[in-house]
Image 1 (cartoon, rainbow, N blue to C red):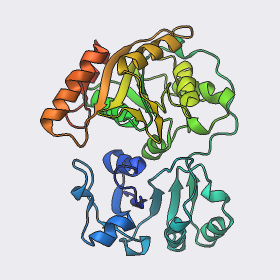
Image 2: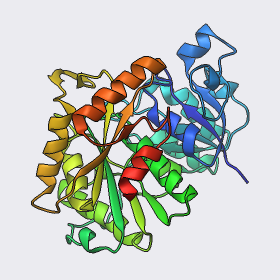
Image 3: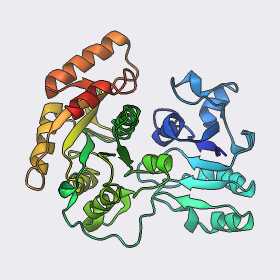
Image 4: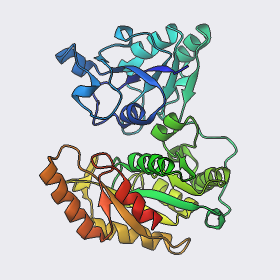
Length: 342
């Protein structure tokens, strides 16, 4: 039976609610409503299809109490720092009181919140804190490059550049072609979609590479492993997790993600994004001493641009990287997958 879920995305849908968008696009669930009170206050007939194409459609409502009956509420937005917005409590409490489960990718663990934990126990509901890593992680053994499979990692010029999206698109396209492939989720969105994974940005820094390596070893029976990247090697806050994944995965190939027109780090606008060619070269240099690799393709997010401007942005990005590039949502991932297979 398909699970019926509500996605909490207050004041963030769709641009700042990438977990909600990822679930709508890729998860094997029925989304019965998206919660965004700002949108609902302006338009009481708003729907997902008013904002996004090619994903599940659902009504946008202001409160969980206004949604159709559901089995789980997914926190579909992740503010910087991953804290709990106290204004979300009524929706979280309503879900638990209705017997629905909570699924959260926040750094604030809902299962450790006394009020929410009490309600969950009283109403036989579960709370899954997706960012709770296993307790038995350890350092890497440095064996990923010895695995008999092709490892492809998505990297980026910044956070929120589409790394999960292109990784998922490549995985699904590979499976559609009959290839034996697996998706390796390293962040909350991928983990919610796949129902397994390790939240790399929550691991002890010494164990980050080991956590990635563990997932690859567990899935080494596949021919292709598509690893979801995190952050950016040039990010002032998140570069550590990026480097940990790069060295732990020891990828054979890299796909570099960028957002058309973005010139500064999201949320850290005083930090400029270097030329993508410079960033690509940096990834290869940082990987070299551990496990040499190369950028074989680029993924560009052109959302918000018309066709002509999108094509111009793609042409510019391709000229910068000197490898095939594509927008995996606008035009599909085939050009990127071909570059990987070649």
